[in-house]
Length: 429
Ligand code: EPZ
Picture 1 (cartoon, rainbow, N blue to C red):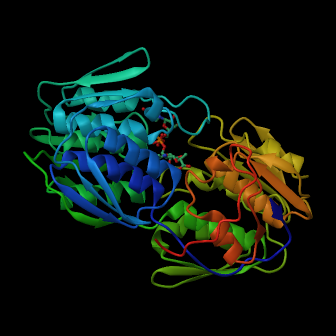
Picture 2: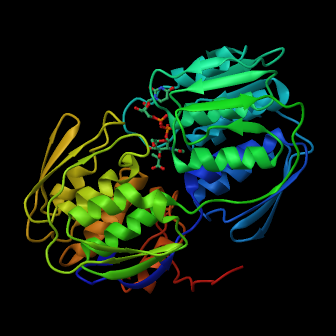
Picture 3: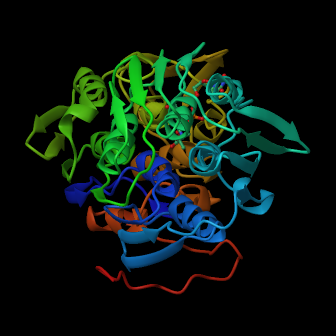
C-alpha cells in the first residue's frame, strides 16, 4: 500500500545486477571447484537459481546476505525439472552450462515475464553450431553432444539470452567459436569477465563479435557482480517523478547513459560522480519520446517505469517498444489511476495529465510492477498493488529502500493472504 504525493529525498544503495547474477550462477557449473561471489542481489530469482544448482549436486553456502560460496566439484545430475525451470526465464542458462561441463542437459521449458511469445530458436541455433543435438520432448529441452566443437554463430536478431547461453556452451568447446550480432549489455561483459577469471578465453564481449577459444578445464574464482543498471534506473525515475532529490549509490554511471539522457530531456538534473549519480527534479517534467533498443540503446526493461513518469509530464510522449511484442499490458493499470495513454501496436502515446489518483492495481510482471510503484508514489491518495512477489523477483528490499527515501509504503498482506507481521529491517546478516 502506498500513500502518494511525497518527494523522495536522501540516498539509496543499488544492489548487484539481477541479469548478471542469473548468468554467472549457472556459469559456476563450468568450473570444478569453488567460486566465491559477492554483490549478489538478495532477490527471489537468485534464491530459485541457488535451489537449482543445489539440485544438480553443487554445495552452496550463503556467507552473508549478498555473498555466496558455490562449490561445483561434484555435479551429479544434468536435469533441471519443470517445477524449478518454469519459475523463471534464466533457468535455460543451465543448458549451455551443462553442455559445456558434461556434454548433455535436460532442462524443462523456462517460464519468465509474460510479454507474448518468447522463442528460444536462436539459443538452439547456437548449440547446433557447436555440434550439439537439441530436441524438445514434452516441454523438456534435451541437448546432447559427443564433443562440443567451436563454430560460427550469426544470430538473426540480437538476443541477450542466446548470447549468454552460447558463451556458456562455447568456453570448453574445442577450437574457436565466433558469435556475431551478439548482445552488448553490461551483464554480457560481466559474464565474460567472470568466465575469463575461471580460466576461459573470451574476447570482444560488449561488441557485436565475441570470439571464444575453448579451454580444457576451468577453475573456481572470486568475483563481485556489477551494480544493477535497471534497479538504478528505476530509482532514478522514481526520484524524478516525485520531484525529489536522491543520490543513487554503487552504480557505474556509464551503464546509465541512455537513461540519464532521457531524464535530462524531461527536464531532470543529473549529476554524475565516480560511483553514484544525483537526481534532482522540481516543477513539472517535460514530455519525451523513447524507442527501446538493444544496448547501448534505451533498455526495454526501463520502458514501463518511464511510462508511469511521463503519465504526469507536460505534453504528449511516445514510447516505441522495439524488443518485445506485447510489453504494454501494464497500461491498463495506469488507466485505472487516471492516466491518458493509447496503445497502437508497439507504441504507447502518453498524454500527460496533471495528476494520477490512487487505486487498487496489480503488477503484471517485474518491471510493470515497478511502474505501478512509481505511479503510486506520485498519485494522490492510496494505491494498493497486488502480486508484489513479481516485483520482489528483481528488487532487493524495495520496501526498505523506498521507506528510507521518505515514501509512505507498507506491505499489507503476504502472498498467502495472512496479514504480514511488521518485520524490522535487519541491516545485514
Ligand atoms: C533478457 O531476456 C532479460 N532477462 C530481460 O529482462 C530483457 O527484457 C531482455 O533480455 C532484453 O534486454 C534476463 O536477462 C533474465 P532476448 P531474454 O533474448 O534474454 C527474441 C527483466 O525485466 N528472441 O534479448 O529472454 C525475443 O522474443 C527481464 O529483468 C527470439 O526471437 O531477451 C525478443 O523479442 C524481462 N529468439 C528479442 O529476441 C530467441 O531465441 C530479445 O529477447 C531469443 C530471443
